[in-house]
Image (cartoon, rainbow, N blue to C red):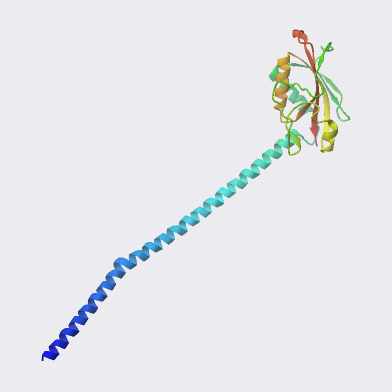
Length: 234
């Protein structure tokens, strides 16, 4: 009887131990392992979602950069074509001269286009007078001698209305440009003439001052300026 009682007690203890082990394992699975696995799965899902968001964001940024680069390229092309158009566009040149004259206060006396496609002389004012005892600023000096004047080039196109001697007609022709020259007579003070040159520099089309002459400074009311301008086309 004692032996059977001990055997039954031992079996009951092993069953109790087994039940406790199963309970501990179940508790670990439900309260430890399973929450951690769900947390890990959620983190992986969040990481994938963030990666997808970053990829889409990067694609949008790259597309916008490409659009901006294309827009800048189109704008640069438009500026170059406006600075050096395909056709001489004499009417456009006259319009630029008129705008610069209005903004500066000078009076245009005469405009003479030179060259095979020039079309002759255009007298804006009949009250023309000769320039006596004029001061010649030919060669390396321009009307913008006291103002900023660029002489560099961008994409093969001279950047601004600048000093004579930096670019001659032969060099421009070698670079693939056709030169239209024009003689321009103005009446106004030296400050007004300089303002005219600055206003002309702001035009879309490129103009180069090849030579400049200005009347005697003491003749305040009747000073005359003579320009020789170069306009380019392709």
